[in-house]
Image (cartoon, rainbow, N blue to C red; front, side, top):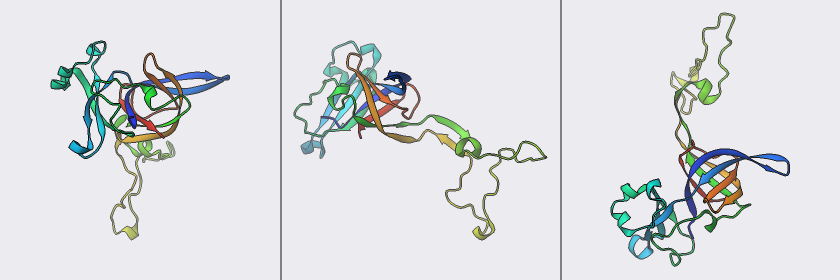
Length: 205
């Protein structure tokens, strides 16, 4: 059994449970198939390589010939670990969301956050900024960068303007509120990193 699954973040929605609104994120884990099996004898560890079949070929039967031109038939290829050996795994086998998780379980979802480009300290770190009246000219400037005892050097870790976002983050202990087996959709409570359409990795908490 695989230790996790890759999926595509569809976006956020809301569910209603016992009269309360539940914010939720929909993750599409469909169209992933096993493309290679790695064994201890040959590779030194046990894992499976999986590929995401392109939409144009999603309704076709998997063929070994696809592996000769992976970029043509697969939009992404990833590797996931195995927990209980490789006996029940075969090349071309589809992966579904119910093989390792059930409704009510908690999962960790990892992804790359939205990239915001170059940002100042107000947006990047939440600085309040200077007053907007009474002759203040600082605006959104970061202010002093050092102090006299630092010998004119900027201390490491100083919060300054710079590139914001586009880093890997993990949202932990998200509850699985619904599983749509027909469409292979996973619905988790709360938000997950990344923009709509980005790849995320789901594993048990």
